[in-house]
Structures are given as structure tokens and as C-alpha cells.
Image: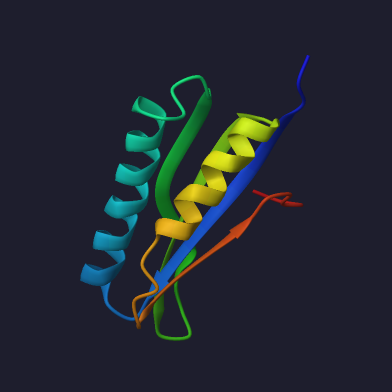
Length: 102
């Protein structure tokens, strides 16, 4: 049996509109990957939800929580998603593959 892990994606921006677009893209990338080349990967995604606090240091923040079975295929999928995220100025996306709190 494979171990179950959690990965957290944090997205932040000074613009709520840019934040919305980045979160939509993150969801779309995950969905597309799961429907196509990574169709055998099973995940449970929660969010994206407003992070607490929602606005910190003049930036709006959201987080996406994903439960997954840890294996080489799921790790490859997450690497692929992270590589395809825009590196747009003003939007920052970070992830924590072994969070100590959710």
C-alpha cells in the first residue's frame, strides 16, 4: 500500500483578478493532467480556498490542498504542473510537499 501525502499549493498576488486567473489555471492544469497523461493518478483536491489571513502584507492569498498516493507517477505529475505554471510578475505560486499544518 502506498503512503498518502498532502501537498499544499499557495498562490498570492497584489491583484485579486490575477489571483483568480492563477488559481483557475492551477485547477485547469491539474484537471487536464489527470484526464490525459496521468489518468492513473488518483488525488483528492480541496480548494483553492482563501488562506488565513486572506490578505497579508498587501497580497491576497489562496491555498489548494491535494491528497495523493506518493509514487513516481504522482510526483512526475506535480513536477509537470509546477513547470507549466506561469512565472508571471505579481503572482507567486509556492508549494509544500510535506506540510506540518494544513
